[in-house]
Amino acid sequence: MDFPQIAVMGGGSWATALAKLLLRNCKSIIWYMRRDDRIEDFKRLGHNPAYLTDVEFDTSRIEFSSDINYVVTKADTLLLVMPSPYFKSHIDKITVDISGKTVISAVKGIVPGDNEIISDYMVRRFGVDPEKVMVIAGPCHAEEVALDRPSFLTVGCHNVFNAEAFGRLLTAPQVRAIPSSDVEGIEYAAVLKNVYSIAAGIVHGMKGGDNFLAMLVSNAIREMERFVDEVCPSPRCICDSVYLGDLLVTAYSRFSRNHNFGSIIGKGYSVSTARMEMEQTAEGYYGTKCIKEINKKYGVEMPILDTVYDILYRHANPERAMRALGKWFI
Image (tube, helix red, strand yellow):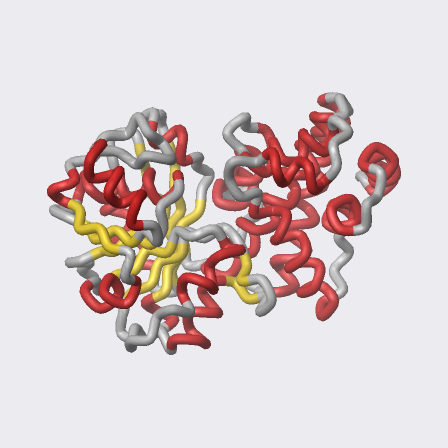
């Protein structure tokens, strides 16, 4: 499978890191950003003015545009990298036929309101061929890609040969891309690891200790397995890097915005204050509510998700809620 013209759709840190990787192996890219002032600053400075500002770009190899229909018309491959809460406000502006395009989601979230993973939404809403839909997951932080640290990505597609082909475009001396066929499982796991990262951050913020945190994370991976196996049954090993590895890097890292969001709450600040303190979107805040709604259909036992939901949306006391959660740990 070839990818002659790739469009990066989004202007944040993850979009910037992936654009950096693509430009190692592609002659040029199209880059959709919604704000013309950001585009002009990018062209003038030679780097993203708001995210990963140390990463320099040869802007002569980038065609920028804030016109989403122009971008998706010109590109054959659309790499979606918008925060999930704002995904629909961008993507539903598309009025041209994109059913023949290759669509790759690096959105680590669910479409709020619709409660659909991105791959399902793109197939239903735009008629994209499921075999031309891919997902990108970790374990990987945008910041470590920018620092040229050893990093690992997972590219999922029902046609694993397509996943391998796109993975080669992301491969760099310090970056390895691992193919997978578990599209839906990867997407749900990417949402859940953000939820569990908020829980880990709350424990860290309230100085709950390493022992409790270890029990939280080990029980979280079991909870993730129960949910994913129920919602999208498929042969998978939950200890693979795209599930367990991505959970670990998100739960423990100082680069994790969801962990940092939870940590602010654990220190005693309100959820609304924590949201205002965040410079970037903590996707787990929205993912918690979406998974809670989805699980009404499946009834999977998810005490960690329920606890995070109660803290975020029902004003439960974080310390009391976390102590009560401990009775579920095995």
